[in-house]
Image (cartoon, rainbow, N blue to C red; front, top):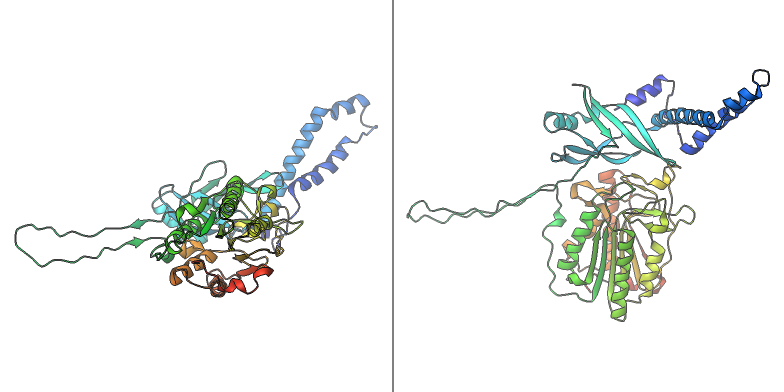
Length: 469
């Protein structure tokens, strides 16, 4: 898919240019000198009456709008030359119900494109690498630039697949579980025959080994309270991969494997800012009502972000934006709240990254500074608090496509499955670091190294803790 890149080379550009100037600044720099020249009065050519007519407010407005459109058109062309049009990837299987396929690119994140069922859809997938890009256009929202229109052309048939942001393109990831059930033996006459034995097979399409065969707890653990958040479908940011399934299955392990009663758990998929505040308040209320004689767990899968000014980490609600972190859950506040509960233990699992980038694309706050990565500062912890994080420094938390989970969460669930939750924290930490780091390279050819932070109060004590206590 190199039509745009070829055009850039024909224009004498040997390599993509780094076009980072914010659009508003670019338009202003384009319009202002032209306006200044246009506003000058040439006394040898114009009378004062003609000059005033020429530079009237109405004419001035028209000229500014004309130059703005020229500037935006040039900006779009320059921006298109910076995009690597060969980096589109198919994410997930074809959705026959909505006749769509989910695509991903580093520049635009994820978007669904209409692909009719039948030969057209099969050709799209089989010949994806040979598709040509044409008819590209962009839209602007403040200093943000987004993909407005894109046409992919199949060379073998000239068939066109069109993405248009003005039209709704829905994509649903289908995980089909087919259970034929046990087969019955029917007697066609009264002759007695040997009994026939049949096995019932469950065919799981697109699922994971940790989603089935979840171990059952041998006792009730009513001394633990849990808040679970899985944020996947963001209003203003790219969708994350499998965060909802992460939350859903972690909940099953809490109730079935760890023996935690459902009434002790706050679970929310696609949590708003209000929901996230409620999740923390739920743990606060539990700790207060039990005089701190409980253990608490906070689990989060979704987008994270760091404040550029302070490098403070935030967990993004689905109705929030990385550009408005005032309406996001600050990690420092979460940690302080958990410490102040003075519980027997407080454990946090964060399947998120805080660099401003994700496997789904760059978050909105970084569009103006294309390519900037933020290394979040390490928050100091107090109380009986342990934090298991999916990444270190400016790394990205990746999905595990084959398993339909985030990479970090998959191995967390896998260890709970294998150990029935009966594993010391230090062994769990070593397992997560070793396996996530190894599989991040094997699966994604990237670096992802989980880390564990503890407060100074429990430097060694935390190592023997278990989720089943």
